[in-house]
Image (cartoon, rainbow, N blue to C red; front, side, top):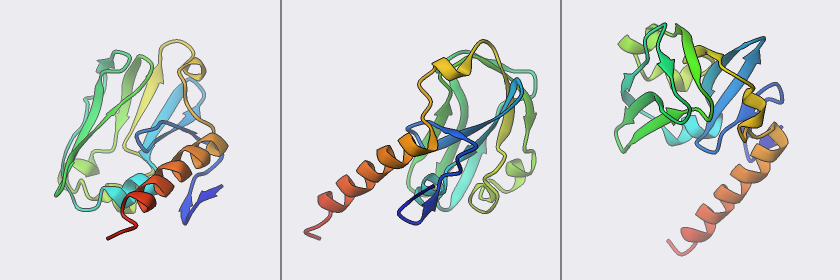
Length: 140
């Protein structure tokens, strides 16, 4: 599915903070949407969790800094970190060219009950955000 020119694959679930999660059995791969990438150009630093870290629901999992802002990724469920994309330590800007794996987590409980959006719901949500931004800057 697409919202504007941004692809939102239907095999993933989405959070409102431009993060996607892709289930793999009892594990979930974490990445950033194409729209989120376009907003996060020039990532200069990233803080990743360590393998084995247990991250409580809604707690900080990942933080990354762009030339404009600091962004944080938290998940609406408890999880344990089982894999991290170590290449991001040396080159955090890889998120913009290869966003398909920041880390992988094992979930405690049922993540489907945590308010994640389908691709269809995410398209509607992000589409509204884009429209509001267009209206906001229409006079500039």
